[in-house]
Image 1 (tube, rainbow, N blue to C red):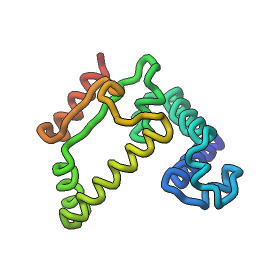
Image 2 (image 1 turned 180 degrees about the horizontal axis):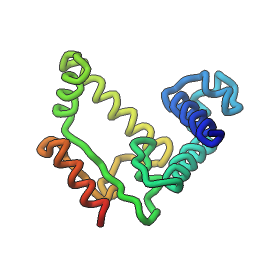
Image 3 (image 1 turned 90 degrees about the vertical axis):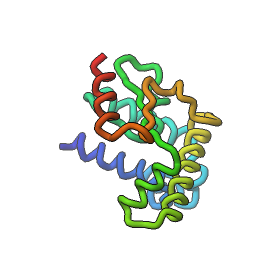
Length: 158
């Protein structure tokens, strides 16, 4: 139970920090007004990488964030998968799922893509996200969710 509580605290802190919450800074021992410095610090990069690596060490799991494909790139037994689609497809799905108009959905997708590119650049020095970061890349413009899931499950068994 204690380990789960520590994990939960780490997850909340990372979520707050990566979302840009100044409230998380004091938790990590940084002044509340040092958010920009904190986000770019080697300490934070190390904390995130350690959290990803420890999660992967503990059990079979799926890690959906924090550029885990980069952090786990040299590790055996890891299947790094990129599930993607065109901006149009993603914004259409977002609009339907969230009940928002297409224009707002397109803006959110564009903002999310920019934030991901910024994260990869700041934390890993990547100017682009090459497909070679992944073992399997699936374009869901043409594949259904079920087809994508089956392909991932098949690849994971190999």
